[in-house]
Length: 163
Length: 229
Image 1 (cartoon, helix red, strand yellow):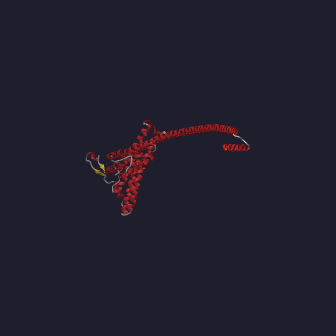
Image 2: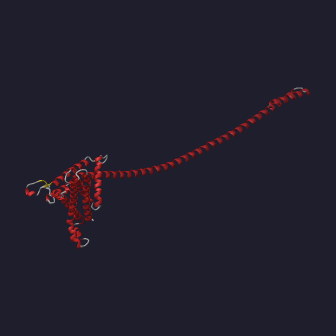
């Protein structure tokens, strides 16, 4: 037990080296391969996640910008169409006003013409009547009775006409 | 109780297992070496079982066990070696497992290989070679030689002596602890044949064996750390 045997020390050293190689090749290398692969994947996914995040951020900014522009455009369109609308409204109202004035003027004119015509007709009729009456008076023998009758007739006819 | 007779029986027992006739038995293989072969085979098969069919995703339970074992063992040796001695941690794990497993064979009724001075001598020889190799690799031969005269030239003989003392102490500590435990267990078996030896066996065969493995690796790591600083 206490005697030292060189060869047994050598055997044990060889055993130890074999065990070390076994540990390295079959345990550590295999586990390390898996672990490094795993950490590589994790790194990759972190990198790609960061990249995607940046892309998303970029897109977001783009969209925000576009949205802002769209808002502006929208406001412009609304303002323009409102202005167009007002213009149209003004135009229509003005047209209507003009037309109405025209119509009123025409009507006034027509009325005047009509009135003149009626007046003329009345006057001519009255003239006729007077002439007629004068004729009658002239041709007929006249006394106080017939004169009175004639006057009355004339007055009645005139009243009738004027109504 | 015949303690003297027991020691004689334990220590002077013929340990040769495989005998070769030529060169007066120079190449004889001890029983302890044969047992370490067994330990080696069992450990190798266990490792092959654990690390077969390894995957990156959806790992199996045994792969998880393998990964945890590697992490834990490396954590232990890394804690002792530090950043500088990182490259030696795998060897230290192998030694830790080897001594631990060797000390545990007592559970199966076999004599622990560390009960043979040749095995512990081989272990400590490897340790001192590794320590000095680490020092040379780190500092270069010139600086390594100079490091014997540090912190001052007077202590140079002491430092040179340490080359022999360190492995000797490692070797004898391991051997002495195991033989002590074995002797105590034998005595206990003589005194109280049942129950009590089983209870003490938990300490001497499992706890003490693993502690000694840890101590051996811890001291070797300490030396390596000192050498590479």
